[in-house]
Amino acid sequence: MKNIQVKNKMPHTPPIKRNELRKNKAFDDERFYRELSESCGYISHDMAQRYYLSLVKVITKRLKNEDLIRLPHLGDFALVQQQEKKVLGGKDIAGRYLRRVLPAQKILKFYPLDSWRKYFNMFK
Image (tube, rainbow, N blue to C red; front, side):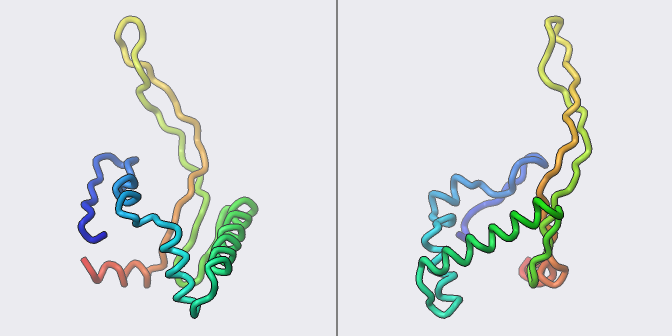
């Protein structure tokens, strides 16, 4: 996984190439649950999966109700209102660009704790 090159061409392009990671088995669910099981003292695969899915359920419920959840030792997930954007969308018959306005919408953001961010910045 260390050989994967990260290129960010545009602001909305994810900085990772998900297809490459899937081919390298970096997104393998079985591997994740096995590592979670080992970290929890070798609990069963089903118990690790049940624990993780219940965590996802709690995060989802809190985000629906309150738009914010703080995860201890990690950071905050928040649903943030994004401003409307003016974009060029296609051309009309005369060849002029059409202007459109994308409506404001809520997007999911993650804000890591400063201590966590500083820890990973040490490796740069």
